Image (tube, rainbow, N blue to C red; front, side, top):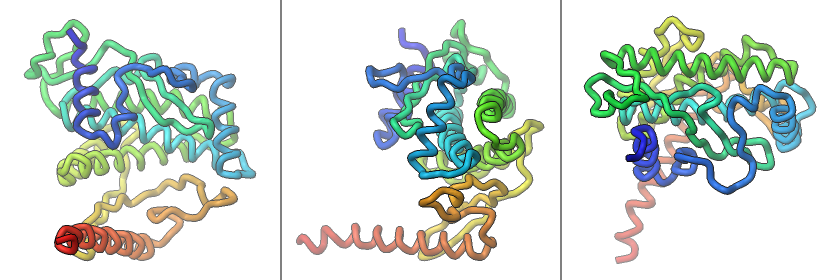
Length: 283
């Protein structure tokens, strides 16, 4: 019988084909796979950072590390949060239980789960599985998820500190902001932004290093809305040769960030209206 977490990942991939490549149950035959535990070794991590720096035409050591970490940690968080929100199950996130495939630019493009242990609600039919840690309620499961991600981030942050001159404090700020963003992004993908928002706030209040003080700003424009996370971290993209401040960068004043999101929402609304009008035009 298929493992409960493999069932969960396969179901999630089938439900969202757009992101199915990020929800692989096992490694495929493509090159570039590394277990997360291997990233603690400079022989594996340093080439990824070098490739990422060359891709972004970075002349400093900090921006490739920040950009690489942001892409890495958001992918790990998004998969874990999807399992939690959609299935109320949390896979083992220890570095030895997760593998990623990286492309020639050092970017993560796929994730494979290689563990056995997982956590689920005691009411879950899979709670009796020998690999399952049953937990009494959603609060306990959320804390378990957050502590696992905290431990995973800690391992990667330590490795990055040894392979670049980036500061530990800045990486933790990035991790906190990406964790909040993962909840609202997954919530939107599930068609339930409010659930993602509520869970992001609940996770942010937990006593872990992923706790954050800032909230979200609801931006409404052109009949659409977006939960803009009030970031305190910067990915340092602006330091690269091709870079600039991101739309939600804390270097931008909040009114400017909101205005950029309004412009984006306006484009989304216009595209939706154009798509809706196409059948009428063809008739």
